[in-house]
Image (cartoon, rainbow, N blue to C red):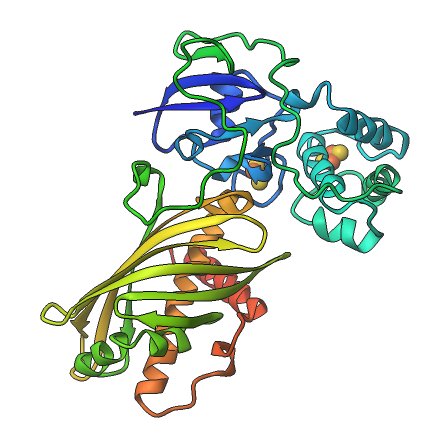
Amino acid sequence: MKAITLAVNGQTVSAVVEPRQHLADFLRETLGLTGTHLGCEQGVCGACTVMIDGSPSRSCITYAIACDGTDVRTIEGFDDDALMGELRCSFSSHHGLQCGFCTPGMLITARDVVRRLGDVDDRIVREELSGNLCRCTGYVGIVAAVRGVAKGKLPQRDPVPEASAASTAPVMAAPAAVLVAPASAPGTTAARPATPAPAPSPPRSANAAAWTALEQQVDIDADPAAVWNALRDVRRVAACLPGATIDHVEGTALSGHMTIRFGPIKTRFHGDGIISLDDAGRSGSISGAGRETGGSQAMGEVNYRVLGGAAAGTTRLHVVLRYQLTGALAQFSRGALVQDFVRRMTEIFAANLAAALNDRAVPARTATDVNLVTMVAGVLWRRLRNLFVR
Ligand code: FES
Ligand code: FES
């Protein structure tokens, strides 16, 4: 159990939560905010979308403990919001809802689209809403509703410090296990953040328990000594990692960027890191933090160890990755599909490294970007295979 304090719809909330409780359950079951709907609970449908620190996020794949110190706004927190009022009317007049199950998440995403992009065409609305699924409407009414509200509007460049709902939000009924106080109440120890979270500090933060951890072993068709020698050269490592580029290395410090495409999301992370190597143990670690073009932040640490493989002249690489995302991409902190995605990245890295060490051509996908069609197909194939092999 872990104590957290966050702002929910302008109210400071302190509670003790299970480490694996997701934010949606916390909002619905602990705070009674059932306007946040749960559909897939896999990060796919978007029904559970809420705002976290000014960015739409999937509350079903965001740990509640990862929201310690954040500003969360659910659909209930938009009762008096003028733009949301416009969207509600427009959804109604354009028949943008039928059963209404997707509507809270759809409205929260739509409001973010209008604020961020202003007047937008059909294509952009469809792309921006592609993470919110509706089983009823066929989307035509939804797109028309959003365009109707966006028409003539200019982007609002600084969407995060928008007007707080603190002064108008009703006081939430406090379940026994939860302490709720107005954000401005005297004696409140955890202030509701009015600005985005500060830039990420290097890993091993106080909230490291909220990190997502992945552990993987991959076999590489090359001698352990050659593999270790290659892993000592970060530029060589980056050359085998799809989308990664090292910009600068000085001693143990490095900086670089990574281009990632995942479904409708295409983004680029810039980050700094520290590398440490243990030649005797043939192990190393890279820890660092970065920021992507959309404002999300990441921090993480990868530890790896080179071991002898099952056959002579082969290597087993043991990798442990721990990371945390904040901002819009925080929705992927717990996504099973993304964990598969990272595993697939590791496999591609291992295959590319083996190819490079054995003087075979490294596939073109290592150049600058990730072929997500291939990658997602690989992820889906693995899931299907596991389903039938079980
Ligand atoms: Fe479907 Fe969260 S419930 S994305
Ligand atoms: Fe029913 Fe969208 S209105 S799921």
